Image 1 (cartoon, helix red, strand yellow):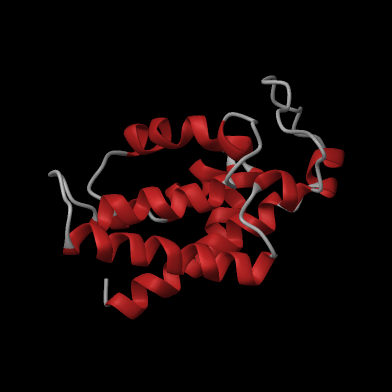
Image 2 (image 1 turned 90 degrees about the vertical axis):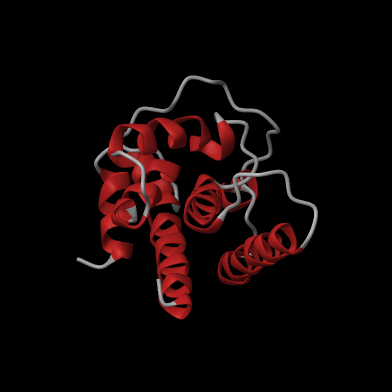
Length: 150
């Protein structure tokens, strides 16, 4: 299976969008599965159903930090280079999907949704592009990894 297919299947298996993408790259990060899933757990629904930054985009940024982030206070080149990578990934996702904001991607007119997650029903999957967005983020991040030789 491709990373895109893995991320999409992870979402269909019930993981939130962030977790679905993170799990597609668990072999690339030096962190155990449970910690990785816990790290991604608050970001579903555009950060706890707020619906702000798409969880799939948050996943790319979390992965980026785990793979090439810095563990010390930074003011210079390391921070600049990381932020360039963040913006490049975000731009690619926006170019493909028109936005990286959850509510815009879902066509919602609310600033905050109720914290209670929706039931994962056929209707849920049919009206949301989340599975495809998981695949898009996995594809974008996978391509970036290949370009970096990682």
